[in-house]
Image 1 (cartoon, rainbow, N blue to C red):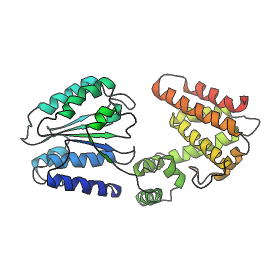
Image 2: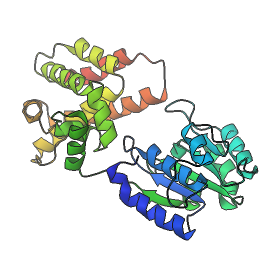
Image 3: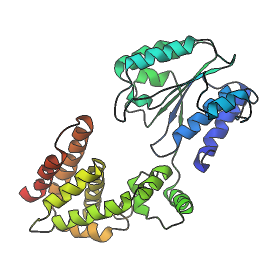
Image 4: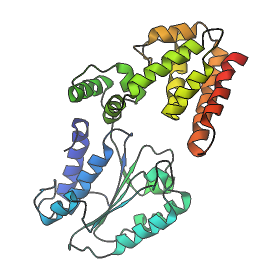
Length: 320
């Protein structure tokens, strides 16, 4: 079942499918939490369906195999772990699938999820197959953005961008799903992505975000006590906590510059105001930059002492 915000793009694809004009390599650009995998799989199942050209019938042998996740002509390539690259061996296997004969005497579909995680060698190994695709083979690539995707891959695909709904639409959708009031800052912390926002609340991250913000704001009031409490909260939440604090500090900078119309922390303006009048713009700018650098460092290198590094970052507010 597709989500409401996916319908327009899906109808465009249906028109191309009905005309037999769907490009052999579709690149779906969509943010995390937008349900892009649902849309990509809907396309894959439709291409493989034996009864209908523009939507999966759900009853043919192919559709039943797809639903059972045992379709022999549907192949998925993805990173083995979150944050890891797709290696060249996985792409070589993908190239072998591309030239195989269909086991159901129909189409073959290869989905490359997180195509922006393709390493350079892997991307280069894929190029020729995308440039000269075997007959009856449909590629579906998904990525969050073009930033990490090699231009050579980008140029060989037909690109489609799935826009997230307006933040108020996202808010209303999540409220309907959860039957509770949702803060706008929960939506904004998740870049407006509906499923990411829903998961954020279901997992209690909204509560833990609030607790971290309270501890952080208390720490930023002289005499700057509670540094280890903030560091412990950051460590227990993981590196996403640094993104939360970075967003908060950026809101403080916005307020200092007289911008108050689109703060991420729209329901916590009192906290933003309290910090904005205490910490200088120079310190805020420096600490935002350092928080983002630390986030990238911890994302890239596992096994580092996260709590110690967060403490070191926090002392930057005291030293300056």
